Length: 113
Image (cartoon, rainbow, N blue to C red; front, side, top):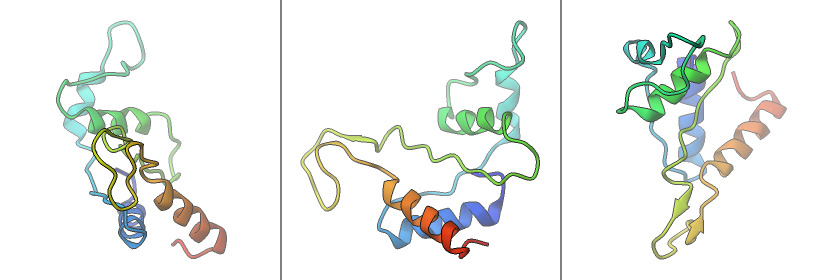
């Protein structure tokens, strides 16, 4: 998820380039109301369904205008209980590390829009 479609697309393309699975996800505005709270500025949990989407909407509340950002929801693929395969070991997977390293390289080189 990202607040900028071009940035989200770049991250998705980078993930594909380095061999990591990714799926561009939306930030559905209709889920935001589930984080309204009678006692706090915002609750850190919303609707039961769409947890990753709600996490992105929660983070969105804390990023200033004009700052491109993305939320990579890696909770599921961060740990693998099955047999190792390809780059994926049993246990902690390092999910999205290759994507983030390439993103940092491109940013440092000025190659990211």
